[in-house]
Image 1 (tube, rainbow, N blue to C red):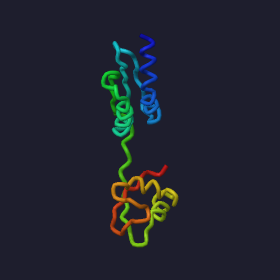
Image 2: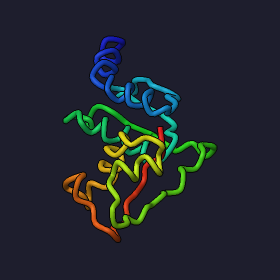
Image 3: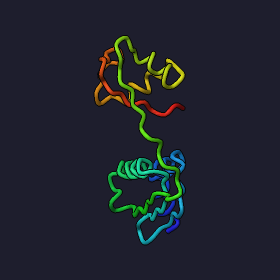
Image 4: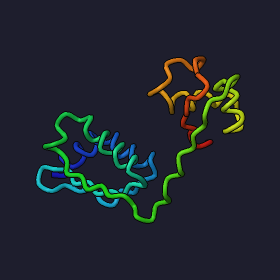
Length: 135
């Protein structure tokens, strides 16, 4: 049985890595019959979804693993979304410098707005852009 536990643990190592990277807490990891039982507390809904996405990358996950992933009720609330309305003469670099303090952060603004931007050089006055949190 210990061998099966180690095999499943190794198979789901990317899930454990995701838990650690996201700052979630692994509460319990054990073997129940032939299934790996994972209990974790995520810091946000997005973190919980990333953990489930990592689990679902393994084709046999439905047979291998039972996951109980909850959101920490004491986790800080996510920051309110900040938006910016593009004005004539704006560029993503100019907006990044003004909003995030670093002109090179234009790529983060571009990535956050992929749903409406296909080219970072093509923004239009009146567009409302999401501004990600500064890192």
